Image (cartoon, rainbow, N blue to C red; front, side, top):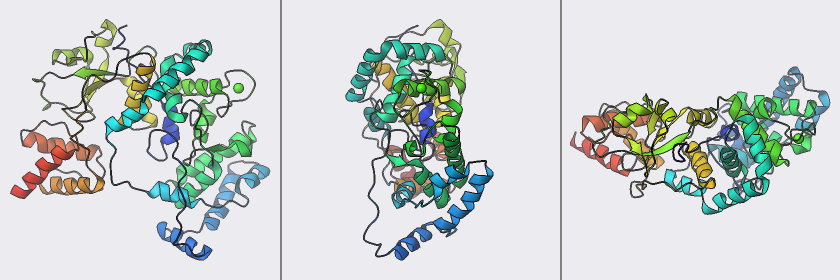
Length: 435
Ligand SMILES: [Ca+2]
């Protein structure tokens, strides 16, 4: 198979799990300082936190209720005590969970970091020094070795950054906060099972502020479902045994429907005559049909025959003037765990670069920045006023906003790429002003 065709892809799952809580794809957030200055006493601190919680429940009240629920789940008394006795919330986690950054990071900036020169070379070195075992894991699970390396590299910088938060405290704080209570409580119940079943001690339950653990950043339910014991020592040690961690990642991907040998994503070039009027990000066509419509592989590669019959969707993450990608079923496997196009592209691209592949062929439109949150709010209001329903304005450029923007673009003879960037903002604002 042609190298470009196999472009890699990805993986991810792990991360997916690890990142499901915060919607961010990669990396462990650095510790964030607690809010200071406004807290002169414990009482005022509690008042602040209570204000932030719609239901106003005190942590101790949540804890008492959850203690009962954890017991009802079958957790052993000493495990419950080890997890919940003396537990206090972590204010820094609430602050981080509720932060809504004004600026949206451009995907090209994200991808530059995901596949930085250092991360590529560290991945190649990691592979070179462990090739036999990594190839054995990849072969056993049917997942390409470079994909496993890329997940490992993005999740924990190849095991260097696994996070030092007590995940019981993190998850308890998120459960108390309430926005994802069911999710966080289910993770705590799974964490208790990890202890009761002998997989981990209480002290080992460390990881990211959002509850993801170890070198491939598994949340507790993912750990119970997919962790693997590669070396056969009876422990699924995703914290300090890199091969257990890589096998766990591979197992998760395989169980999620990974198609061995199939591409994840390939970069393509759109001819000038290619029109977006009939395009939709959900439109799935065989590669041969995309080819018939004029799409070709970026660079000078050619399609492998077995890939021409595969269904694929056309993704334009930075609009018509940026690189285009055909994405395959494996891309969706990744996004099922972490619904982020940037993350899935990051894993795929890092894997390709570790394997010696080339940088992106297309240029990113670096002057057409994604809109800030407040600009997106304005855009959404203007689209709604123009009769293109973007839903209740929330400052987030989600699928409904992009669809409304495409409607606007079609109605105004513009390239209907739905990219929520500065040029689209200018066009919509100008149309609103003339209305
Ligand atoms: Ca083991």
